[in-house]
Amino acid sequence: MVEIVYEPEYQRSCAYDDGKVVGECTYTAEDGIWTIDHTEVDETYKGKGVASKLVDEVVQQARDAEVKIIPRCPYAKKRFEHKKQYADVWAEH
Image (tube, rainbow, N blue to C red; front, side, top):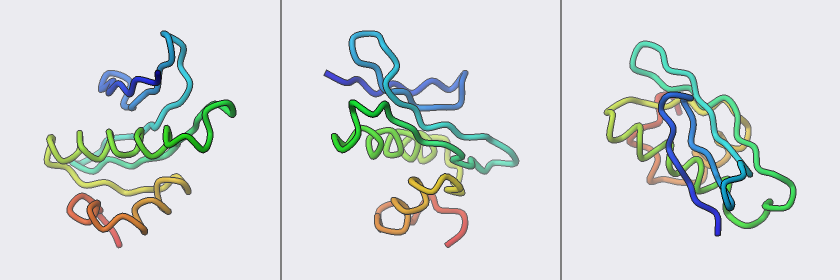
């Protein structure tokens, strides 16, 4: 079973399967804005919703921290465009 873990010290959410990293969504933080710059999932886990859970976790953490997000990564940007519930944290749209 894949576990999604938020790792603020690495500015990412990470997917683990039995202790092995199988995906991550990374961001940079500057002036109260987080920029999602990369989302990647191991080939074996593609199509299983792991990438969406990774982005969801970063979004939730941004809400908790009361910061906005710029989705630069193509996957995250597409997800933001299709998920109205992200509007509260989207810095530019």
